[in-house]
Length: 493
Image (cartoon, rainbow, N blue to C red; front, side):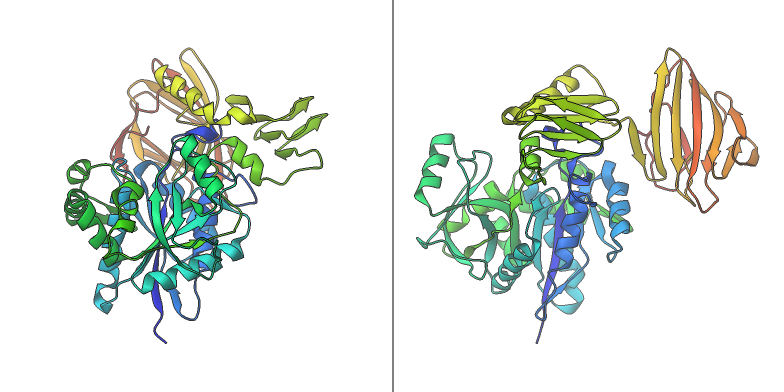
């Protein structure tokens, strides 16, 4: 039996602003652990790896993301011990239609030597599923239908008139199951409330889950027919790509010229009326949620008898249907119903569950005010480890820094600050001007302003230091890099 070649594609470039303050621009929701012990991105990668069957062969995933998150992607995949993935880095956001087109061009190129036309399974990195066995069964049905030439999406039976989702109407008047790929009669993206209410009452409509399954060649043909401008501009960006294993970077200038459009508007809405395309939907009853806001997180969380859900060090008393997410300290809640409380070291959110969609307005206000709380957590992840800004004031800042075993920071200097380093755990290899020294626990060194320096961990345990900065300007952009293991040619954000 010849196996269907499946190339999973994980869209991991979202920002998740409605899950602030846990989700930030440089550490968005797909990389957060909201349930269980794995991030949403890790759960997505793990689910796709289970698609293999006697007639389905699954290739390592292609992750579509952006430059700022590239090492987060690699670190989280490494923790899963899955086959090495390829990471396609978009220079800027151009929505899902160009991203899926780049994935199709990549998949065809990978399979070219075998003359294969792989099936793309394109899914978001930030969705949750309660029943993963049901997810796998529905997706395998979709793969088999796509192998026959169909464009397939997965549909969710609606539980209410949501205006933020696309809607799918099948030609059949009866709801099917995960073993059927029903023909689609209509694909409508994000209707108004009155229309959504009518769709739910009708009984033939499903929510669009945002998962698309299609042969790479069929997708390219459909895009060429409906949006030839996107097809040609994306191909130009692909032709000019550069590779730096495991990263693929489309040509920046050509990519900037691509019209921004979603898969839904560019192709899916147009397909049902086009006779040459077989567009289908597989129903999926797997407890799906797009986790678009904190209310959705509460919905999928494990709850106590009063309907409360909590994570971290939280105490709730005389409260009902409330979500508490604590990350760094004890949070006590008394007498609150239908409330969300999210605590992080530098920000706390309190909102009524019914208004959790409005959190994005807080993020917009932070952006307008030029504040950094929408972008960075107090603890900032870097490819070599992380740093935590413990304290700061006029002309000083204190950081706790962790460097992974074998990792090295860039060779750098600062124009406006000096630094004191104190080792609290592990062994530090310090380049300080012309000197290279080893420091162990309780030892320290001083880096004068303007001195070229580097920090490395030559040991087998994490290195932790306390860094005290002093100077006239302490921003992260005061870095001049001379050498860098991670290819960062611009100052750190």
